[in-house]
Every structure is written in C-alpha cells, then in structure tokens.
Length: 450
Image 1 (spheres, helix red, strand yellow):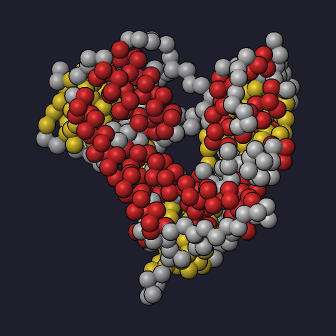
Image 2 (cartoon, rainbow, N blue to C red):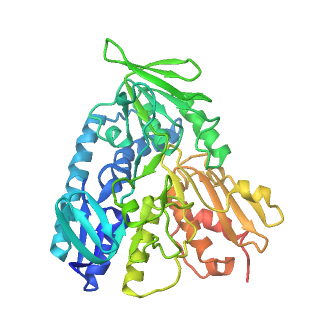
Image 3 (cartoon, rainbow, N blue to C red):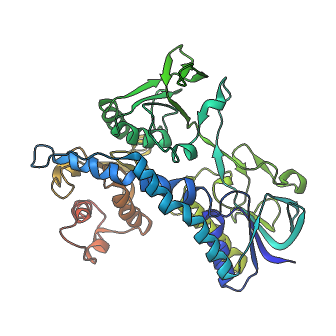
C-alpha cells in the first residue's frame, strides 16, 4: 500500500484524525479539490464569528441605553471584510504548512474510489489500508427561474460592501445570523420562509423574541411563502417573486434552504457503498458498507446535529478505531447547538417541547436570569433560560436566549454529560463575581443532591 490511510477532504471531519494517525507513525495522505482545511475554517463559521464580533459588542452597549452610555458606534463592513481576509485567508496556507511539516502528503484534486483500497486523483492512483470520506456538504440550490442570481453563504461572507436591500430565502440559522448583521448596518432585509415559523428546531418562545427584535430593526418576514423566481431589472437590482405573488425589489438574494451532502463522483456506486440524499450510510463504528472505508462529518446520513464539533468528535473516533485504541461503537455525548444572532440562542439535550410531552419523565424550570442577575449579564433583562430535569432532578436539557448563551450552554452541557449533582458542583470553586457563577448557583438549588 502507498499509505496506511487516505482521507478525501481536508476539513475538521478528516484532518484531526490525519494528524493523530501521523503522530502515531502512520503514513497519511489528504486529498483536497478546493481549499485546504475545509468550509468552517475558510468560508464558514470562523469567518462568520470574526465578522460578528463588533455587532455583538454594539448590541451589548445598547443594553446600557439610559444608564449612562451613549452609543454612537458605527461598524464599517468594508474594513471588517478586509480584516476578515487578513485573518482568514492565510489559514489554509498555514494548515498546509503544518501538514507538510508533519509529513502528511497533500494530493490536490478530486478523489474518487476505484475499490476498497484505491483512490484516483487526476490520472494517478493511490492505495491505502483504510480510506476516510469527509467531503462535507454544500448549499442546496433552488430549482426556480433565475437561480443563477441567487447567492450562497460563502459568497455573502466575501461581500465587499453590504447591499442596501437583501432578501434571504429560508428562515434558518444562516439567514437569521446574516440578517442580524445586515439590519444593524441599516440595510433593509426581507426573509422569505416557506413554512410558518423561523428556526423550527429551537425554543419557539425564544425564537419569537428574536423575530420581534429583528422586526423592530426593520426585517420583514414573509412566512408561508416560498421563492418562485428571481429576475434582473434594468437598474441592476433584482425582483424576487414569491409563491404568494409578493414581489420584492432587492439588491441581493441569498438562498439558505438547507445543505446537501457531497456524494457525487466519489465512486460510491462503483465500489458498492450505500448512500442516499441525506448522505453516506455508516454503521455504529462509522464504517461504510466496505469495512476498510469510513465516513466522517456532515457527509454522513445521521440524525444528530451536523456541526463542526460533531465532525471533530467523529474524526477523533475514527483515528482511535484505526489505531485499535477503542473498539467500542461510537457514543455521542449531548451536543449543544447555538444560533449566533442577537440575542444568541442555544440548546442541548432534552428540549422543553419533549419535556412537556412527557411530564411523567421530566419537568421544566424557567430561570429569567437576565432580570435576576441584571448587572452580571450587562443589563440584558430579557435573557432567559429554561432547564429540563429528570424525575431524580438531574439536569438533562437546557434552552437559552441571551448573548451569553454560547458560554452558558458549554457549562450546562458538561453538567449534563457528567451527570453532576448539586454535591458535585459544591466541590468546585468558581471565579466570582463572574457572570456564569450566578447561573450555577441558581442551578445548584434545583439539582439532585446525593
């Protein structure tokens, strides 16, 4: 064999395992046809959170209106975009240098399977004991007239100037995160959603609070309307027409109606690997129908959240499988999900909806921590937390609305996964007067006591 392991795709779903295996003395190659290090690093979550930073700060400053702070701050999108390029653009080069220094071979081009141990890249064939498929997903394209005028999230995160009017198709995470930034810059925003609600997987009371805040900032939501067509006008603007006949004159249309797995032209049919429109089918060891070939990350057909941390977890698991460190089936912990809007929304574990449907198993406790811990949370008075407990009063789920939600959910996930009791928390000493310690104190009053 040319290599012990060949990875197709260089994102988080693959490169963590590649590094671990190389450090363990294995010969490793990574095949990549786009940009090294994948979507998240180059044109996904990293770029988004970098651009989001000043918007979060300005939003928090507004919480001190009439309390002695005058907010006159202006965000310059073009300068922020230049900063984004300065920070993000070199990352793929840096990752490539790291791989090279470690002795990981980079094979640039499209990789396709010829059999259970052979990958073809351009006109070259390479063999490996194991192959890992981590090709990720891409934005779904809308089959409507004028689809060529519809942009995706990657293009939005490269916008040199923010358009005066933007139309987002879909009311999911991507649309609402981008709409939050555009509205704060003063752009007019329209969100077209085929369904009757935004962010269907999240706490709808929190979502409605977010929608109302966006509406007060000038965002117009059109629910129960799909996109029918997009046409270009003589003045270089566009007209987006909905299935209800609504016409929207706009400068920019972004499609965010979901993502689809990159399974085409991988040779899956040739070698007999099962897949469907949701992705590649794997067993509980992340093996495909060919034992020597694994799949990792968003390209897998799975029901759990397709997130960067999940892909990293799977990548590390596969490395352990190949090294023979752990032969057990993969066991996912509770996984947190976050929407980086203003306010942030986060959730993990058993949801409020599940708890309400199963009152014999769970009970819910609402904690209006923004009001109860006003100064600790920078006067975000409408920040809200709902905790879900099982019948023994162990924490099993949480749903949060508030700017501190991402950090709070990480703490709560650890408590859930470690099955921590009030006594366990009592053995810890936390920094004071930090913001999170107040929520921990409130939580410990309700937790199971040994």
